[in-house]
Length: 636
Image (cartoon, rainbow, N blue to C red):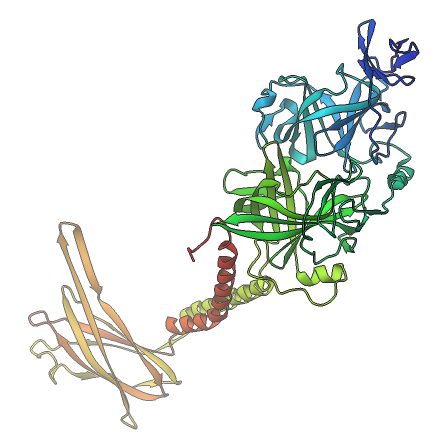
């Protein structure tokens, strides 16, 4: 890196700008902020002392980010937006270029400078808005805030007085990208930085193991609540901004010697999982460090739920929620990967979520430690989407959008994970992201029913094509002078054999045209005289009207006789017809053991009964789920 050397205007000692593009340097001798204005140096006065943070980094550490030259940490900037302080480190590369490494809540984001496209002024930026950042892609605004330039160490690439208010907009992009638009102290954008979350190992910082150990240098210990004197144990001292006393409920400022922010006259709600309890979820062992009661109001009634803040030093923070005995494990979601949020659905991680509910939530009680400046009465706008067993949630304030994704956990899992005594309370109602407990079994029921229904239909088609045998066919002529239904017109067929017990199909065919033929018949067993009566009417009519040609009926008709035993049979047929329209004759065909569709239909009903009942129960479950949403299926 190129360098520039001059004398400090405050103390006269030598100050070295190791990065050729640095414009501000904190003198190591007197602590003054020295601004570089061409060949002239100006002192902005002494900067404040660095605020103790759990950072594992320090100036002078070297590393190498993939695809970039080697770097060295040459500057440190501390900012505070009112809810906590964070560090930003200036990386000076061997080619005299630079980038930022933001460090907050134990996470690191590498941010390289990119070409700044035309963007809106700071006052016109709103969370949730889409911004086209050119080659970087389309990003979503997640945070619009102003932070105070608290103090600095080393050198910085801008000429801003310590204590200045700096405007910035954070954005989330596709595939895990992050971006920051720097507005400086004005309203117009001055620079764009694009990057993503990284680990110290990815940065090539080889002392990562010892650095992780140094994270523990701020040890938690037993201290007393200044309000009630009760003992407090700070379990995440390097991250905690607020502490709520579990004894009296007072809210304390962990960044200001536990100054009392709010005091209560009564203790808050007791959590089901005590602070300090540990449990393994996934591949990490989490410690419960905070407990919060939140609620929403609907038609004048407040509905509350519990949230537990979990902490693991290497993974940061997660949440565990309990709503009416239903539990979910909640992790951060990358806002830039959320899609289609304006169509009543949202898509995240290749999964589609349906909008469930939108409401304003407020903080009612807090106990334990929190990584932001929480206060009772804080309100956020919540929009929930569901795709059981997951939910996707966006919490919004006027300056920030935060996305998270929760996964449903059975109450028994929670009791086992955190080794709680007794049995968990029975859940009430249906949770938005709860999976119906019979869902897997239902799939098997549906699949089996579908398979059996297919077999029944296939069998019916096969039997229809191959089943049944014709046992007799005979044609008859009606005498020209016979009267309808007379003895002269009555005939008996030739005897025929029915080889096996079963149904008998009788089909009559007659060349009727705008007339009808009615057959009063009987199937008679020759040896016993037992008979089965039946009748068939064949009719066919056609004509023309204002709508065109029409037809009705057919020249053939079929009837069935059930449970006919085997034997030798004859048919008695007594025809009747319309006067003056004597049919020329008719044909009779007799078939035995013919497949009937109603039999297949009854079999389908029997097979379908259980899946229909299962589907009904699933429907009732879903109706109960959505009854608590903005899209209730019924008004009751």
